[in-house]
Image (cartoon, rainbow over all chains, first blue to last red; front, side, top):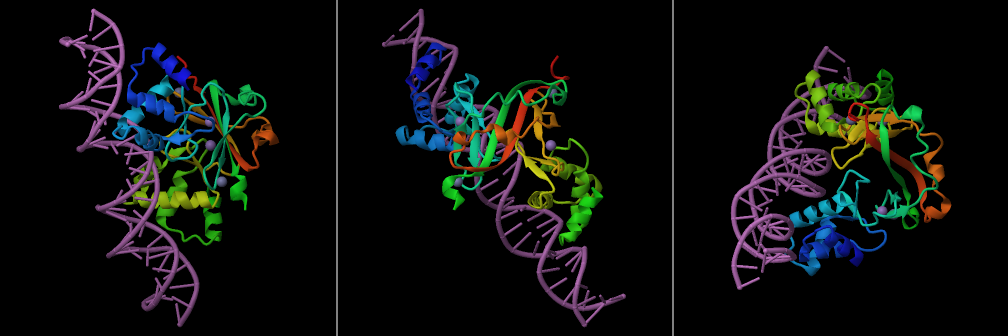
Length: 137
Length: 137
DNA sequence: TCCTACAATGGACTAAGTCTAAGTCAAGAA
DNA sequence: TTCTTGACTTAGACTTAGTCCATTGTAGGA
Ligand SMILES: [Mn+2]
Ligand SMILES: [Mn+2]
Ligand SMILES: [Zn+2]
Ligand SMILES: [Zn+2]
């Protein structure tokens, strides 16, 4: 994640304490936090960070391709730092747990030309839904 | 769609003018309206229908499996009466147009057991994204 | 050290949806 | 047909998630 800070600096990002803590909160595997969760965790380290700043920073990270924005349900968007390894998501319908998964093959390939209606298709978002082991009871 | 009204009556639904117009608005192919769009169209026929009634009715139709709820972006959910023919969606990133599409094969089959982490996977939502012909310019 | 353009702040505002208390009415009973 | 009653509808307050803006602060170059 510190290489992230390097990359951002190289792109002319002004490095502020707020941006640093937001980037640090978004570290690790299977991290899919909402903006408010990012804000809460950032505020543990930098108490007066504003919600608007978190939204701004997340938006910038998304534009720069360093973070992926997800909306797996109709609720708050989630922010995923695992942006450099393309993957899909497996979501528990009970508890909302999210796992990164990699389906076999290219998910785009299964859409025949006859089903593309002249669109230039560039991206596929796949959400697998089911019960996780601890909710299966 | 009148067979929908039959099915609902058979399930003990009390038939009101509000429920009837909501069901009528949700007729046809490639219909993916937001709750507010449904409300606006319903209000053309029944001016004093309340927004809450539209939300209630849509929620009931979803519970009964007669309508599918979609959240392809982080915006308003969309309601899809094409609930009896399983399909996926192709969305234009520019104008938001939505098409029903049928990928070849079972989208669930491409997720290997090793990528299921003990989940009981029951459903897949696939959103193909790209530019539609009129936005391709 | 100073300057200033870029960034952060707090609070008002919007969009989408939920909840509630009071009033209405569909449909079965008599 | 009229009566009855619980299911349904209504308006508006409330919540959640996110955006916008005017003001204040500061990173980093000169
Ligand atoms: Mn992920
Ligand atoms: Mn559809
Ligand atoms: Zn679970
Ligand atoms: Zn388009």
